[in-house]
Amino acid sequence: MSQNAKFSQILASSVHDLKNSLQTVRSLIRTLALEQANSEKPEFQILDFETARMNSCVMQLLILYRLDASHFKPLLEECRVLDMLEEVGYQQSLQIQLRQISLAVECSDDLFCFCDDTLINTVLVSVVNNALRYCRQAIRLSGRQQGDYVCLCIEDDGPGFSYGIMAGTQGVKSGELGKGNTGLGLHFASTIAELHSQGQRNGFITLDNDSTLGGARFSLFLP
Image (cartoon, rainbow, N blue to C red; front, side, top):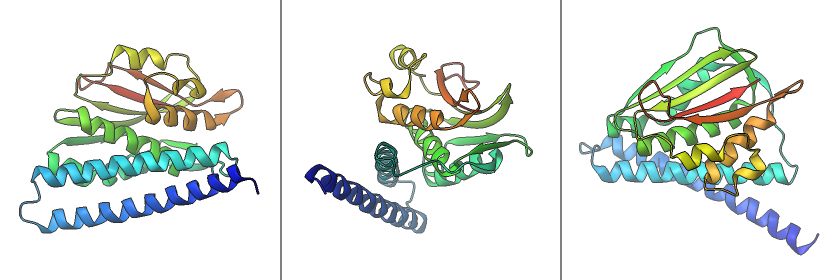
């Protein structure tokens, strides 16, 4: 085994261990916050938010590494979209509670899509985490059928995306996203979207400020 290959394996293993440790720390923070009478203190909000953000980044890096090393392929299954969206909301429930954010989930009971629900969950949790950073009082998760695609949307009532970030995603492939200022989260989301394909159609993401709440809107389209 080459020195580079050995280092890559060690790095991947270390990232995986870090992810598990962060999950343990976040679980402990949640327990302490719920047990304490003063759980609404901003310190708990900051701890939960930052550990969630670190865990999300580590998860994305680990998955991107596995994809690049051909050690990972998406597992496509029929998934109920409402269940997926409600799970995302549940995973962010403590932060939503501590910050007194209103989170609404809107989706019909009979909407299904074929996807790797673990990968899509990682994308959506990352986007909601970002929305929590910038929203004022409300976040909306929704799912709908749009032509040949199932569209999953995350909207907030914050200041919206900057023009530079929105322009950076227009017609750009995932391999090019990392060259701009769009960051790891959008590069990861675009990469995962493109992994989902049906015939000649691939998944993709869009960003705009046409949120029904007045702020940013992230849309993930799955064929």
